[in-house]
Figure 1 (cartoon, rainbow, N blue to C red):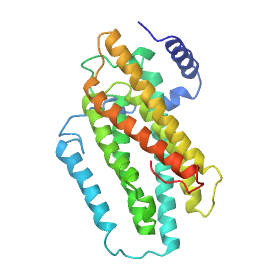
Figure 2: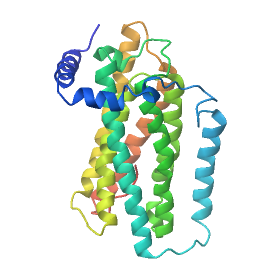
Figure 3: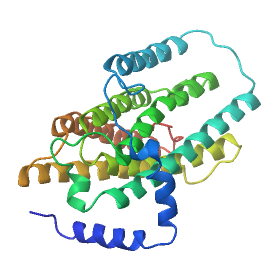
Figure 4: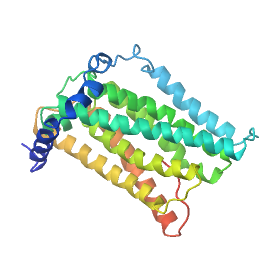
Length: 285
């Protein structure tokens, strides 16, 4: 059983993209390089892949966030802080674009049809280009802890909300579980998240450079749209799981579905409270 229209749309788009002259070049750089093509996630062997690592990383992040937000901190000059923030945003903006592009090219190169994109077969191994970019995505979420440090150093403690800390800590766990269980449809969630992050880090780069773009509300709007899209994709995963031979990573789906629902609620609440009162946008993602 198939969902209407979507498989046809995927096949049409894929057929168009792979015929473009630039696709083979992108494929050589983002898919066929040996370290990407031969990537394999092995729990406890791949760097940052052990349960102990992810547990200590998240606990350390929460602990240091709590400690640094309650003790006196070194004072950095405003120009220095803005320069650090600008470099941080440039790095994550660029990385997000590369991850989105790399995963998209891998999808068009490696995934034969829409069914497989949404529902990896049972027993799928977390290896190859799709999981290489999922691994880079997982590591990037640890780099994003720097968002919190910059907030603390800037003294903007109102931005250090429960939503911010909850999101930054739990998304690392989510990415780890998705990798370790070879969860179906994760590559689609990766692409949507990275595209939103390109917009978000562009906005914060402009702020760090002294500009004040008028489209700050659009950042949160895109985040909400991303969560709705992620929830829709995960609903498709369940559909395919129970109407076909089953999907890889269905148990981890339960954790991720609960997490995405919680983010949808928290971001919707944030959106309603802030933009109905014309309050500054919060850097929550």
